[in-house]
Amino acid sequence: MEKINHAGRIARLQEKMAATGLAAVALNAGPSLYHLSGLHFHLMERPVVLLIGPAKGPLLILPELEMAKLADTTLLTPFPYGENPADWPAVFAGALDWLALSGGRVAVEPRQMRLLEYNLLRSAGSGLEFVDGSELIAALRASKDGAEVAAIRRAVQIAEEALTATLPLVKIGVSEQDIAAELHLQLLRNGSESNLPFAPIVSAGPNAANPHARPSARRLVAGDLLVIDWGASHNGYASDLTRTFAVGRVDAEAVAIHQAVLAANRAGRAAGGPGVACAAVDGAARQAIEAAGYGSFFTHRTGHGLGLECHEDPYIRADNQQRLAPGMVYTVEPGIYLAGRNGVRIEDDVLVTADGTETLSKLARGLVMVG
Image 1 (cartoon, rainbow, N blue to C red):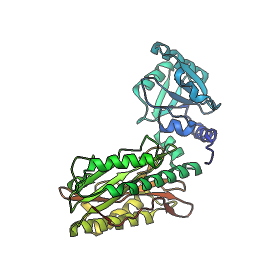
Image 2: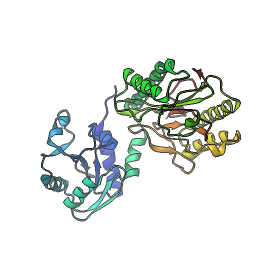
Image 3: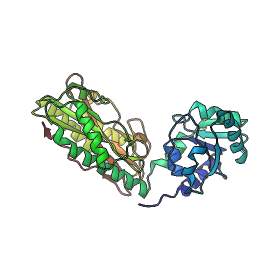
Image 4: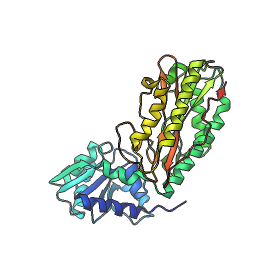
């Protein structure tokens, strides 16, 4: 596996901080902290904060019980604390003093930063202004390096092998929950990390008309379309795929909506490439479904970025003029949802290359009959 240069990632962040006049970036436990440090921490009752200044740092505030995670790195200066929460403010104040951080703008991720860490930082430093650093961090993470692409590629392979191993179970009379349980087991057996990107979605017939349905006790019946949306994790990186199957013989409407979504998936994947706006990819997929007469039944964006999080930049939606760049990985997942009847979604993972795109997922997209 290609070695990840975390020091280089932090240096690039510091360059952007200096150019934009940021006094610091503060990240608590989550994907961005892992991206910059290579260290996994989960959100818990004890705060963990990575602090980086434009010319000094990084430092890490963490519980003493987590210090063993730093044994193999000299990248971070630790500021550990014990079990008494009364000691936390002093440790935070010491960390800000070490950074000489007494004022200025501090970038955080609003969707990730909790009130716990925010209040500790705010109380420890006077004159700090907390600002939204989402775009800054997203720009660092959006274009994947070789190690990241390799991890996603492997996560795709694991997911495909897991579904292939699950399909023999899929028969008329089997419940959505039973299929989801078997798929979850097969993901682990085929090499996924236990922390899946999301719980598999298995929905059939009327339930398939809900894009984010939860697997239910409903049993498959002939005529259902069966939507399976699943993903694997490898080295922290996610895959996200969807295929739709015919349970026994299905009617002409089911065939028609599957054909429309298949055409949209093909058009969306073909539309991408370096310099192409995300909106153009969305438009290509949406146009194919509109041409088939089902435009009002495609109710969500065409896709989203993929990496340490299952949903991240870039977002493939109609209003997003962000340009694709080499190294970006995103999904193309058009769908048609007919309330009370059936639904279809076909989703693939796409890598932007220097001169086009590569579809990382290879499983057949046609309307395969099961049951």
